[in-house]
Image (cartoon, rainbow, N blue to C red; front, side, top):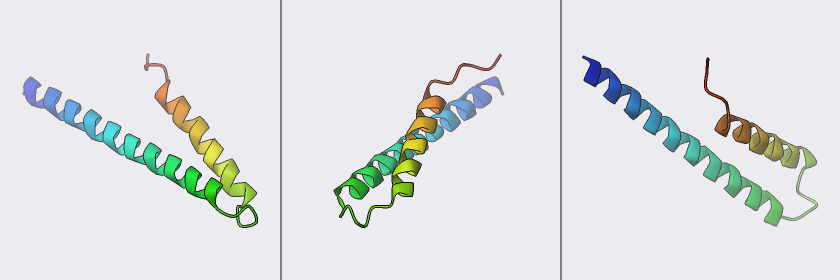
Length: 67
């Protein structure tokens, strides 16, 4: 049963990493699309939201291990 548990944890971590990577790719693609659009159509709140997502993603990436 220990091997099953280890495998399940490993598969879960891999799926989490893949979904987080997909999220980061979509975030960067959205940022590029917003920046390449017409300046009159770009909302300031959209840019702020993109930077908040970058900041929170960085904090998730470098979080310390639980004690």
